[in-house]
Length: 503
Image (tube, rainbow, N blue to C red):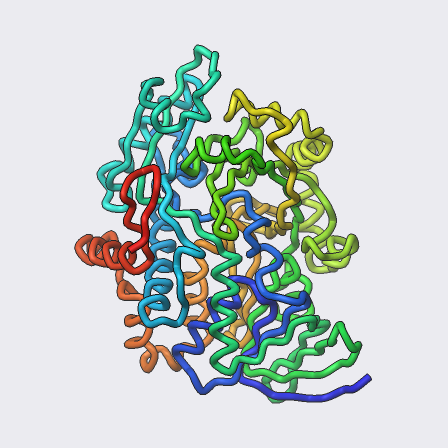
């Protein structure tokens, strides 16, 4: 067993969309920096970034109703929807730059135009959706959004969902044609191909076992080669922990104060995928509804058209469950290993206050396939069990921490980066909207970790992301110009709602 030592400028732990994005940004900004990547699996994008580990992708707040909550006074809070939409546009700008400059090829392999819709049942929900539509329709981000509660119009928009529907309850939907379907697994692989071509050392089948600070301020990683069993120690000026659910353990090992009092709550999932091509062809949209009363945001049901391996697919979910693993390929000891003296009271407080969530997850775990098909029939009344099969989704670890708003042991349903005070180490935690906002999140990591380079890098950042330093909301003309450019370069100009064409 060897015990070699190396030194580098940047280490990226995990070969998912976040590390791929940060690595690509840094390679553009500092092409001479040495970057090393360590991934425990044998290829990139195999955990949370993988296309089969997500029931629906392309979170841009066009149709996700949990991003537009109704306030106590009855008005709709659009703040989060506007923020997420703007962050997704930052991602599109960066992808546009990469395609335009031929860093990556064939954008239709990772992004396609697709209508985004919200669908609700019941008088109260229809009233909510109408108010949401009124709150968003005049905003430049949501231009072109349509609302209808006319069953005949709905049959045109979503024939599969409307066929066989016998309920007399009021129903309504909104539709916006500027949505997209994004295959983050394909994009991750493209970005790692680019990094490999530009002298980034990518080490697959390598697991980072420890992270500690050295006396000279560098970070030393203990890395095991899973094929040979050999150990090497790698020192780096900067470390990014983008290991999905595995990030929490490494953050704890780093010992930084910012990583204290944080726990993780693992949530497993699965979804139904349609194996009947005739059924698949009858639906062309991402359609999101509302979570059941008392259910968590992660449980929002949606029926999604997806493009995977160039083939049109239809997925429904998610169905949540529980396993103590922090990664799909993780260990059943992951949750127990994350319990430390500094976070045990936070975890216990969370366990007591989230009993309804725990009960919900157990109920979900016990569902038979037929029970899941019954839930699907709430969306697709004519669904036949033989046309659908169960696929196990990726593992998510929701952050648990003490907050002013939620008190001790609050579960965070979102994405968060924990950075050391000096910016030399950063860890990505959490889940949705995650990948869709990857570029914005990684730009913020760069701002916190490399402030001394920002003045030098700003022209290049603006070349890659024209809106950098500005908000679309304050510059609507710039927004339209960027949208037009992105649509042309990424091939998002649709000939019709039914079939997209690529220019």
